[in-house]
Image (tube, rainbow over the protein chains, first blue to last red):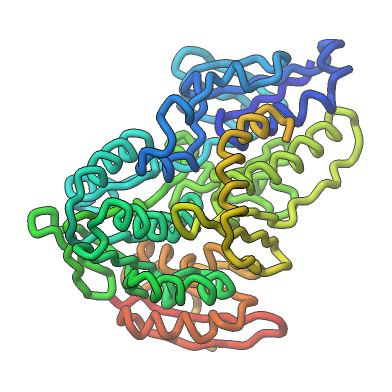
Length: 379
Length: 78
């Protein structure tokens, strides 16, 4: 029997499992193949929902589902923490048990490491994990005016457009709360523009200007002076704040680093088309875990999962795997409390945002609920 | 060019997070004195990266046009 092990229970892992099973139904039934998904927690969180949780527009319970509920019943679910991947002996060593594999799918995601920037944990807020989002929700609810700095510190970070979205929504939130005229909103970005993709920058920069959202560019924080509430940058500048909404640094999963499978950031070197981990014929990597120069976003994990599932199914059936990932990404961009645009792009096509509208915003709101169908492999 | 790079970042075909962000990541990770080379198929990198290198106070060794991409070579100086 061939053993396929998927390591990770986020979008990438869950979708790979759910796309794969229907393609190898006969082999599963005949017990020629077993698909195991290993995850360190028994639930999945819809992380794009943090952007809504901080403004009290979605609650914690709406963002969380039992992972067993999402997975095809044929998938063997193991809730255990992987501590090492032994590629030589094709084993995953977990805290409780060890699992053998013939094919491995690495979907271990990204984690935030605010501890990489001295002072950030003490003085900063963020919306990149549940605890941080709940803390920020409380800070925003109690904000009575002052200077808010939204600072992109992590490169790369999950959901490249989220910092823009939080700036726009925050502007409207402060207006609705009657404190916008007593507040300064400053957005900082590491490059010389306010966003890496020119067509997006061209659209949003005038919108920042209209709303009085200030911005600083070529701004790469290296330290937060928690006592004086000041950001200090790699370029030698300082910026003070009353409330810091940081996009913290990110790294790959600890198990990747501990297994010697990652680069310096803990990202798995991966072929940009085949999604095979460099140097391994039976190991795929996808989603936030890879070193690929594509967005770390749920949509990318979704499109990659289709490719990995197709190629794994082909390998199981003894067919040449020919599916290729073309870099496709799709992102909604909220441009206000009830207004949004969207972009899609791939390795060969730059993004072209559409004029923001209420309609696109309501599609996003609907997708916040419909995501659970995507997770099940249905949408 | 007679400077040998310690690290080459192939960011060709990248729109997001982009070649400059890849370089900034490398600058944070590498030691002072190391030479980092970024490959980009995006023409604006040939202008934007030298601009950042100047602001951040590192040394731009050169921008070299290859057939369908640019090689931007930088030494971390602090």
